[in-house]
Image (tube, rainbow, N blue to C red):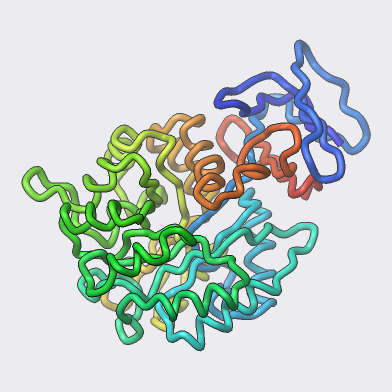
Length: 377
């Protein structure tokens, strides 16, 4: 099949080209002048933009299902919804739970095989339990524990090596030693932390290279106490997640973070919980009750409890409502997540030889078609 007559995002820019797909991979990009004929089975992208399939490195669930259910059925439901929304590769995220619960999640993820219309599970993001009580957010404080490399390695073994990101609060006892021990095997992310600038910087110097939902569950920027945001910005090897749902971070701060970090170091994430794709109502996250109204999900305490806007929705909001250039949003939603997860040799870009995960968008950044591993869905 081919995707013809569209503007294709390739090599950092939009070009008039047709995408030739064979056996689930991109065979060639063919430069185009004028209109191309539309053959049987082809996708006509006239007037549209073709971008790589999105890759969400941080989200918990959707459609009434949560990754931490630890069941094949839950992961299939999640993967089907995400694919329909143009998120063709997923790195679902665990909450703060005991080791036995997390172990069952790892087992289910390891066994998962996507159907043709479902996203590929390319990693696991382990958000808890090595975080700070002081910035607990929507995590369950009852299950927070000190950093423990044995705990982590047992779960990594059960997952078959799928854990790509593990979170730490640098100021907590044992966090730096843990970081030095595991940083060669997994991305270590600063998250849910009360760390000041120096404590966060020490973690980055010890091998941490990632920040979980930048600006959320951490100290804000301050001119005399710059905190972890400035520490991350000072370290060129650090990449950072950012939620662009219009709820978690003000648009001006989103634009400021793109200027501070550059579009090669930020990753747009959704941080969705199980209510994504469903109506307002009562839901749960990490065993805690969540009330969803409009585009906000909150615990009974009023604390934000993740998002209900999927990654494509966050992508659209960033471009349409926040002034993030389309090119920057693509880098932050596809290319940078692929690099962070170590899958940029076959995903995250529109290049010959790469897996044919594509999204066709209209001028309002709405989905026209999604192509998953060479199959239009």
